[in-house]
Length: 492
Ligand code: SIN
Image (cartoon, rainbow, N blue to C red; front, side):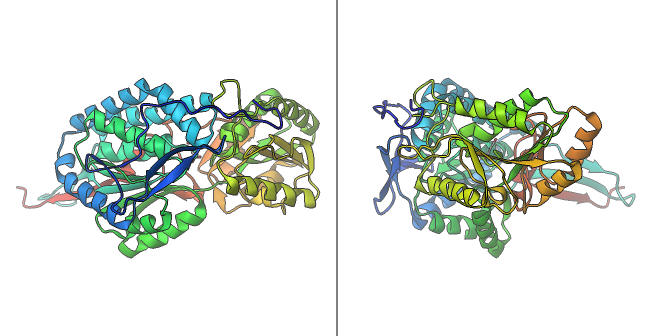
């Protein structure tokens, strides 16, 4: 562990779930040209494994296999698909520890959080195994006496899931859970940083018994080339993407060529407001959970804090004590609370946001320094102003910027002054204010006296430039199904 300057590289444990080939049409395969790429442990810089590097032609093979598997798979009964998902859920839970270790190795997330992510990811599989059986249609009172009108919901067809490195498991299951439940074969394209967790759960899907072609995982470092194929190939009927707003816009424009259905879960700029009537200890707890989860690398992490003048000193003081106590190091050590950033690009971004804020008058209260390798000290910054980059863009790192406010209207205006609208948070004990502010915040999700809002039972997603569609919950299935109106005429 390092409080400030040192990390101890750990020998890589053997892990029976490590697979390095892509999984296509029920087989473990190489790229046609034999290429591979390396997966790096961000905590140590060591190579964990070399993984198959697929190109366009390989991905087309996977799409063809998924498309061929679609009719038989969608014709299974909902209960049969539900049973497959249930088996997959059980296998994921049974392999929790190995999956968690693999995840920590490739994305740096600390073990306790990786274990939590296995539970979180598995919960989507369990939830959609149940929802598979509840994709009800409708009977509509007809407009004429000789007609009967019925609505049915059917599988949308082959689904492509392009997933991020910050949740190597849960962002896959949140997409493929509903797709598989609805009767749609899937092509998973994990990021090049974290293909091993994706391949490990593909192996568990194979063991669960999904028919060949129904579950495919294509590993690649050629993101642009493969992304374009998934968007432009007519056999893919739906694309679901989690990642940056810039890439989301690019994929959306590429999907326009065939009007492919698309769900986007994109960047945020989450405000965290502490009103003068808040429970300050609860607010500090919520801020710690939301800001420093996964080292600040989640789309719903707090990005900017606004604290009322009357409780500012108390909040900053208590938060600073909690932040200074965070233990940084290799996430494989059980007593570490914060791991490394994912890569050099992530680290450079944090340094840039910090330098910009300091040049415009921000003050460091805790931390502020890069450590060895990809590690960065958990940091508290005050005197934040709206012109700073850190107040306008996701820092995706362990820096908590704090600004002072005095008026409710003013702080709502500041919170909404962004093109993003994913998550937001505020703390207040006044019930009228809670309703008023929750309704006024232009976000897809609002945490009210709560810093942890993610769960499989509630809809996850954003408005404005934070995305299109919702994942999880009873609403999640609809994005993987087409609605069909059956109009029966000549009834007498
Ligand atoms: C994300 O960062 O994209 C997902 C976070 C979550 O599911 O809580």
